[in-house]
Structure formats: C-alpha cells, structure tokens
Image 1: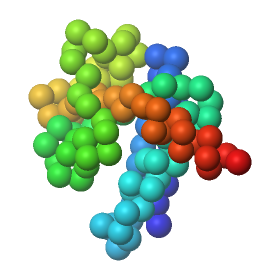
Image 2: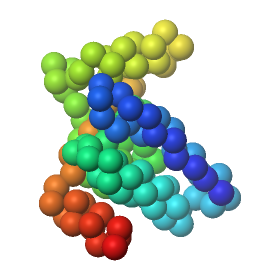
Image 3: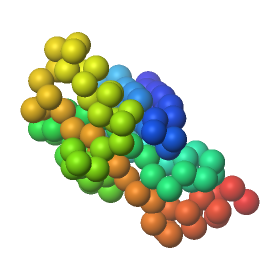
Length: 118
C-alpha cells in the first residue's frame, strides 16, 4: 500500500521517500507513515525531520505543511540539504519547483513518543 524511507542528512533525520499507491490514497496512510518516521526520529534523539519535495503540488509541500513542516530558507539550509537540492536540479527538477522543508518537533511530539514507547 505504501512505504516511507528515512536517512540521515546533515546529522539529522530526513524523509528520503514517501509513496502510497494511488488506489490507497486519501485515507491517511501517507500522514500515518510520516508520523511513524517522526516517532522513530524522536526515539533516536533527533529534534527535527527534513525532506525535499515539490513546492506547489497539493499532495507535496502543502500536505507536509499541514503536518508541521515549514520551508527552509536557502540561507538556513545545511550543506547536505543544499547538495541534495543541487543533485535534484542535475536530474532535471526545476529548482524553482523544489523546496527543502523541516518539521521541528515540539514537546507534544516528544511526549507522544514517550507515551507510545511504554
């Protein structure tokens, strides 16, 4: 039905890929997968989760923003994030359509992880 893959980027958790089969879309599976990765990140001691995505596609940046991700201004992007976005441009993705985003976890996410790990 779907999967999420996370890596370490710039020494922090990074959502490398999220895929849900179209037949299973719009049922909350993508959101559940992102939250699962976030719980893993918190359990590993990371304070945020980053990703790169399409800026204007409804099920991309706006979807992630609804979860809590915010765009990372270019001047605040760490070296590996900049390198990732540059590699995407080399593959033909228009940099104007791509965005790096970060969800910085608050006390609510950390408390939820402690509750779920008991």
